[in-house]
Length: 105
Image (cartoon, rainbow, N blue to C red; front, side):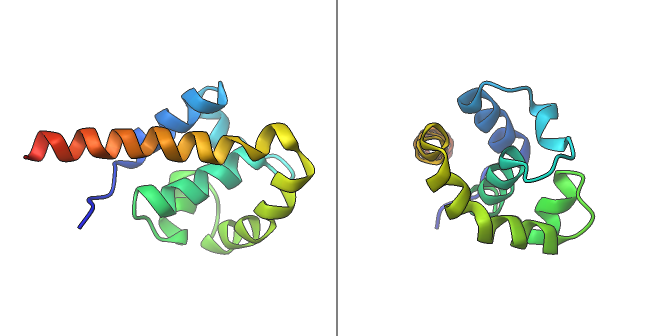
């Protein structure tokens, strides 16, 4: 079984891929693609629930994460530059996960 990464590692990696400060994920903005991607990665790569991801990002409820994740495909299809970012982040996180697994061996 693949061990989840720490939430701080996921956010640091995502910030590096996106070229933003980690604090940008905590900023409240209308239709924040940054928070959408961060929530998605926290759930997928850090093994957090929607509620936990919302708390990590300073959001009120997991429902907000759910609503944003539903809109994510539309947001990415509307912006070609953004559409490549989830794949870049996923590849970088996979490398980190492999490095973590190599430490355990």
